[in-house]
Image (cartoon, rainbow, N blue to C red; front, side):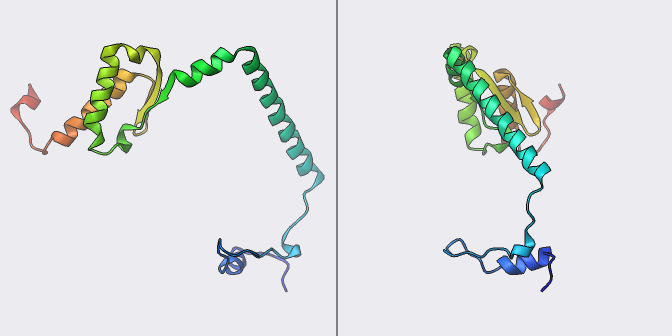
Length: 148
């Protein structure tokens, strides 16, 4: 029996394992290597760092709970324009327009995108929606109005 594990041998080894199997299969003892003291020390250092950051965050939230409420209640991540279906565009334009006209948009911080582009402006998001709606309505022909 060889002591090295290749990708092909692992694929062959796991090819029959299903989620419904209760027992599962384990790797041979020769396939694994114990962690070195350096790796163990690095993992312990990272775990301690994560614990310290979590404790600092918890302490800050305990001192200023209003920040947590504000950040959750007043931030809004909107669906990327390219991920919306054609049927969703008109309703989203109407909703965003009403939100802006009512003044409610000023109470929120927004984040969204259009493909790879990103914005925190609700007005830019509405503009992207309108461009997408115009593309949907276009049948691909040129009109004289396009060149004015």
